[in-house]
Image (tube, rainbow, N blue to C red; front, side, top):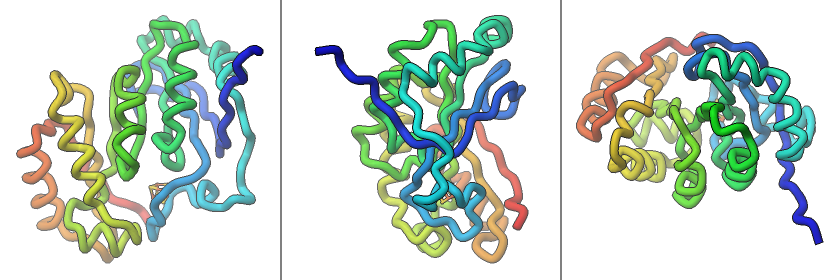
Length: 207
Ligand code: SF4
């Protein structure tokens, strides 16, 4: 019997992004669902079971993304998985990456707040990681996301223990209104630098 392709729920696909989340032209593929409950969630539809945009199989996703194959090849771009939390769909990403053209880059936007096996499964395929760390202070993180950040920091330490990972990891350090201060962000940055992180994106959440 032929193996059935995996399917996953999505909130959207955005084509022709340039230099926003990965090199070259990228297509953002945004999954539904997230383990966090951020107070200022940027994509609240991914938390609402009623707001699934489409359910797509790996093969159908590949056919859709092939529309931009020439852009990807010409610019060194590819696909960026976001959401929601894409690592919850690690099996889907793994299957998709085994089907796609080898030249396409694969990036991921993640909170890293998932069990380690998800990260292990996708790691061989990922060119760049955009990690939204929120804040490394457990109390600030918990108040903002309602979740614990022990797994986040463990996963990041594990990731950074791999060769040349500093070139692939960009950590987002948001100024979160009513939750953290510049001093908190500086403390997060110092802790992350000790882990070996070199690339940071510090910015303001607009609420
Ligand atoms: S991690 Fe992103 S998608 Fe998930 S709750 Fe926070 S802002 Fe929303």
